[in-house]
Image (cartoon, rainbow, N blue to C red):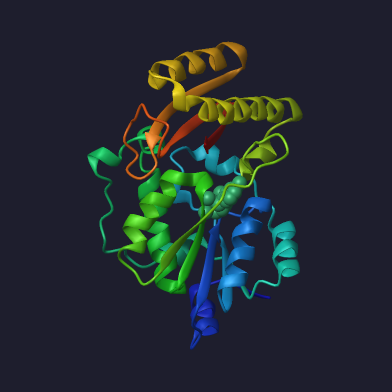
Amino acid sequence: MKTLLNNIDLNEALIGKSNIGFVPTMGSLHKGHISLIKKSLKRSKITVVSIFVNPKQFNNKMDFKKYPRNIKKDLNILKRLKVDFVFIPKTRDIFKSKNNIKIKLKKKEEILCARYRKGHFEGVIDVMTRLTKIVKPSKIFMGEKDFQQLLLVKKYIGNNYDSRIIPCKTIRDKNKVALSSRNFLLNKNELITAGKIAKKLISFKKKGSGKHDLKKILNIQKNKFNRLYNIRIEYLELRNKNNLKITNKIRNAKIFIAYYINNVRLIDNF
Ligand code: AMP
C-alpha cells in the first residue's frame, strides 16, 4: 500500500492506470467502510481510498472539530486489506484550484438533511467533483447509509463524469445500529437507545404495508420516541426511494430519520 499526501503524488502514481475503484471516506474507518473497500478490491484493478474530513460539508464548526479522527488505526486497517493507494490530502491541496461549476441544489432537493444542514450537500458535491477529477475512477463505491448523498452524487457526479456510482448496503451492528464514525462519540447507553430506535423502525417498515395513514402513524411514533428517549428528532419521514417524494405507501419507499443524541447527529434509513 502506498500513502499519497498530495495531488501531484497521486497524479504520478495513477499515470497509465485504468479500472480504478475509488472509496471516498472521512476516516475513522469501521466495517461499513470496509465493506465498500472489499467490493472495490473485488471489482477494480486498482483501489484508491481517500481520507479527508471535508470542512466545506460541515455547517457547524464544533461538529467539524469533534469529528473522530484515527489516522493510525485507519492506515493499519487499509494495509491489512491490501488497498493499493490511500490518499490523505491537505485542505489547501484539495481547494487550491477554483471549481468553475457553481453548485446549488434545486428547491425540490432542499429536503431531509439538505433542509437542516444548509450548504452540506453543496460541500459534498464540491469535494466529490474535485476528487473525481483527480482520481478519475471507473467506479465510486458509496454507502446507502447516506442515501440522500448517494442519489445526489449519482446525479451531479455520475451523470457528468466517466465514473459509475456503485451503491453498497448499510452495515449494522448486532443491535441494528448503522455503523458510523460518529458512533465512536456515543456511550453504551446511547448506543442501546440508537439500537431500539433502529429495531422499531425496521419493524414499522415490515408491518406498514397493510396500514393506511402511514404519515400519521409515523408522526405518532416520532412523538413516542421524543417522549421515551433523550433525543431530538429532526425528521422522521416516509419517502419514495427513487425521487425522495413524501409518500404514504410502503412500496418503493424508505423511512428516513435524523436525530441528535447527546449532541451527536445520527442519520439512517430503512
Ligand atoms: P464517511 O466516512 O462517513 O463520509 O463515509 C464514507 C462512505 O462510507 C460513504 O459512502 C458512506 O455512505 C459509507 N458508509 C458509512 N457508514 C456505512 C455503513 N454503516 N454501511 C455502509 N456504508 C457506509
